[in-house]
Image (cartoon, rainbow, N blue to C red; front, side, top):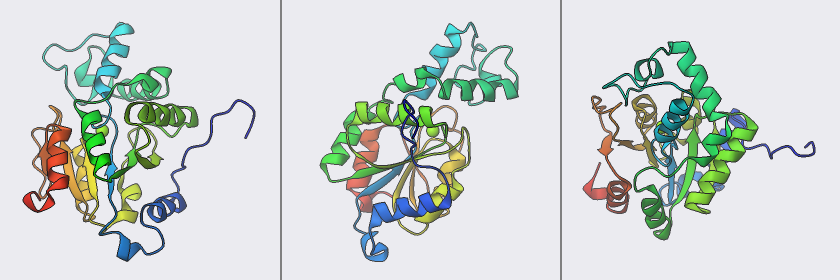
Length: 231
Ligand SMILES: [Mg+2]
């Protein structure tokens, strides 16, 4: 590693996905997966308030919301005079900026994560924020700052990437999977993960089969600690 460079976080190749599985379940995967207290989770819109941070950054740059469309998922619908490709580029720029290292916790995430941690759970992060090393290091540092040492591993995917490949090693594991993007939630559900969708305006028209919708981490705590009452 060259002097002054950030430590390289997990890369995204299949070997890493498999090693995350080993990290989660140890050598006796089949025996351990039913009893392992591991929760797979997205970050933005679940653990951290990405939208709040991004909006502040955009407004500071001089962009303005489309009235009534402040919560649209696509940035070309959310902001005036932003083209689709420009919106994607702005998200990438934000996710690689220092501002992303200052995102604050989402809703009651800190209390919920700590309650689950007290019950023995650890967390495996799968996030498509960025795979740029400096951005990944900032993200890990920020997550540890807010949630302390509750993370078993971090998977950093390119900005906006699908999560199918990253979830594939956990197929049939019956692990919990927390997401706010409907497509990624479905990608977990079809692989046999017990999937929970965090409620947002951008997903509240979606009712994917077999997926529980929640509004808070307190809802997630209640479901995870009383699984027979839920899904
Ligand atoms: Mg998200």
